[in-house]
Image (cartoon, rainbow, N blue to C red; front, side):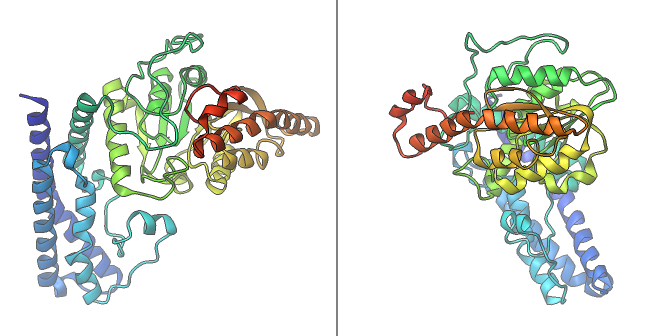
Length: 420
């Protein structure tokens, strides 16, 4: 069986799993909304059945088109088709019965503009384990086929390319102490250099059994694989990423559900291929809404989420508060991203609760400590010492953005990538 045939078969299996689970799941969602409004679902049973049937038919037709299309011609994902089907007849059914549209936050409104009744699933797991498993297999098959054709499973269109797979002489592929060596990151996209990955590996390997590692911002799993591979048995590894298709870089801020679903499929496929899918618990949610899903305390916090000031400051402050005394917080794009750097100045620089533990490129490490006056002054001084490097990085990004990359060697930057 060819890869194309195998991919088509997995698509058919996913379509069958959805056909079996979707009507019951949707009927239950509609009944819940009716009850919350004080309407007896039995009084609207005929209308509900018609809405469910129409949505199921629309979903089935969309899946049939998707399963027969070549991967390079696919512009939808199975989850986006589910959401589109819900936005039709089921939405009209609730409107006709006077069910009020709930107030949704800005993130939900941008990610799912047509899901005005907030019916849609965030992930396939909400439709049942059979659907979730079929979706993972389909996503892995798609990522494999795309990688075989194009060399990698589709990448972000940022102003820089992801880091190369091959290690340079200055980037170690193995380290000390425990946790073994770095896993094979070939084909796993991201902006974590191998030298930074080694620093992350050593931090994860130092977490004792029973400890907890939290990652904010997983993208397609490059850093997640490092953390999960290095973590000792008994250490919980939690990856938080909404995979909404936004905040992927300065040119991809706005959410894009199709792009987000592609990131999620690649994330799952990469973890499966690395053999660590069972070691990671993924919370597919924005970090500010993920707190109820994670217990305290944290032994290691790795922050590489949204780089805008507001979200970055929340991650450093709110999630940083959950790190135990003596625990570590590693921050990517420190003194490289303007938003992250401003967030550092309002948290790690002045709170007195963090002591710097070095920097590898833009990966800065901080230890949670008891605040003292001299400790706070020392941290302000260290942050000030990073400002020349920060100014140089901003200048490099400006030159690259306006097409003057040929001038960046004058600033000591000799690649066409953004500094990270």
